[in-house]
Amino acid sequence: MLEFGTSWCGHCRRAQPLIAEALAAHPGITHIKVEDGSGRRLGRSFGVQLWPTLVFLRDGREAARLVRPPSAAEIGKALEAIAA
Image 1 (tube, rainbow, N blue to C red):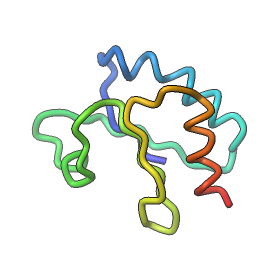
Image 2 (cartoon, rainbow, N blue to C red; image 1 turned 90 degrees about the horizontal axis):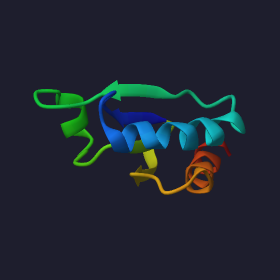
Image 3 (spheres, one colour; image 1 turned 90 degrees about the vertical axis):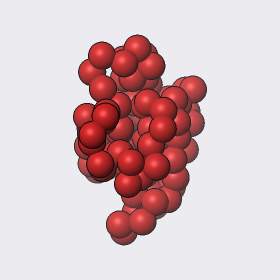
C-alpha cells in the first residue's frame, strides 16, 4: 500500500489512526509513505490530486484506491482485496 501525502497535511494526520487500525489486522501488508508535493513526480505518475491518497497494489498493479479515506473499515476492505 502506498500512502501519498505530507507530514503537515491536516487530512493526512487525521487519517493516520484509521490507517494504523486497518493495517493492524493485516500485518503482512507493506505500507510505504510517499512524501508528495510540488516537483515530486511519483505522486503525479499515480494521478494523485488530493492527500492522503492510498493506492493498493497487488502484483504491481493498482487493485484499489482511496482518497481521504473516511474510515478504517473502508481501508480494511481495500487491504483485504490485496491480501487475498
